[in-house]
Picture 1 (spheres, rainbow, N blue to C red):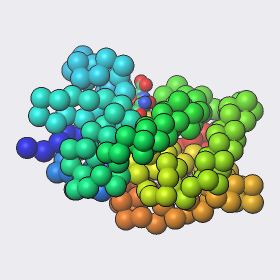
Picture 2 (spheres, protein in one colour; picture 1 turned 45 degrees about the vertical axis):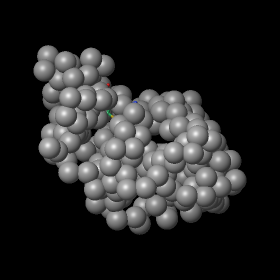
Picture 3 (spheres, rainbow, N blue to C red; picture 1 turned 60 degrees about the horizontal axis):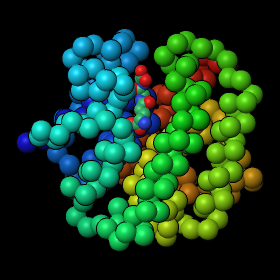
Length: 216
Ligand SMILES: N[C@@H](CCC(=O)N[C@@H](CS)C(=O)NCC(=O)O)C(=O)O
């Protein structure tokens, strides 16, 4: 039985789950949902996720939405060891903390910009939305000044979640390498990972190009 993943290539949350499927060798089927065409609003899709968002994952009788729930599930179920999502309670707590940091700060602030451009045709980015993203970069720099990866000295699913946002966001709101050296090095390093090249790069570039062409 394969995992079903409802996807939209430009979505960072989707791209993080695709990368996780690659990392954990999950046999999966990709089911594209064109959110610009409203396919996430059909009664059939709303049964799977009443809050009409991708990604949605189905594994047997489990239907799960939200990448920050899907990534831990995939790591626990399909990971060969616990390095990407430690079983040690304290280490796991730090990974969870950074998954939440992504959900409520990095991804949320990116989505405040990109979501409206993609879904409602908005053509401006207010200065306060840019300032909020810059503040997010400052938080990243503070964390990455303490540890090599976002939740410690090893790469984890929290890095994967944030990577999928940063690969597109930094093409829209520049990440100044002088101001944010640790974050720039973290990003440049992870961008070369095979899972990022295979499942993130094209969608990240597509989202950035789409947004930049509309707000230019
Ligand atoms: N917290 C969710 C966010 C998912 C999300 O915002 N998905 C967007 C695409 S990036 C979406 O489906 N938007 C359509 C909508 O909200 O109607 C996650 O991490 O999966």
